[in-house]
Length: 350
Image (cartoon, rainbow, N blue to C red; front, side, top):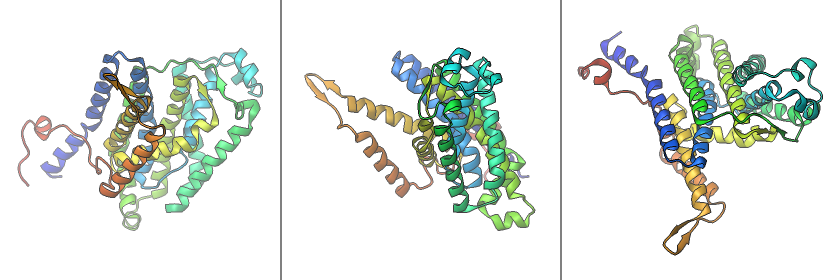
């Protein structure tokens, strides 16, 4: 291994640190403004970071576009609700729950971890079949899985409440709680990407034939990434439920699916930094456009964007990014500390 290659690896190892510091600065700025709505936006943005980074663990490393990861967020949200709601509320809202779950009254942290674990288990079982497919067939299969979960949750009324919202969840997710989960997701995603399994999975993404000829088991590495990504999507779903305080199956269906895809595409599907930057860029843009739609005053004049401008502007922005920068804002690059900070001096020319 050359000194240049070792230096690049050491620099890449700083990526999760830089991204974590970026999110910390984002939280400090949001809280420093003293605006409660901005603080809520910051918390929601960091929950999306957890979801999209988990999504990236599979999509970014495998190259297979999944339309089913919102289903894991749905499963995680309801598992956390089943475990944390007060027993008397569950008796009213969800009378079909098994007695052991109906009597459960867990703390929110172990409930979020269990939500991720159950989502990961479902991913392991469903992925065992889905990931034997490849290309567009695998993507369509993940969408079928999403539709199946949504249909079950919308009709399993005694256990999920059906299309009625489940209310009464503890709203404990602050920007700091969401930051902790986002940093954890980034660290695990970076460790997986740097592991032998992550490297092997990216090799199959670049050239399946060459990877197979080298003895790489594509199916096994995809299944591992799929299961790991489902854990953070499930935990992210639990955070969403405890941020809003209300959950409904439609909140974890097409709108969330396309939001996660849009954030990943805008930031760049080829890097972990792209996943984080895409969430930040789109969330800040949405917040700014929402405020512009509400209007602002300059002297005696009031200006406001027409209602619906937010969706139109964001759609045009996505089209322009796909045309002029198809690899996303980060173009597959990772944010890293300068070489002289890592090595103590600038690297020698190759």
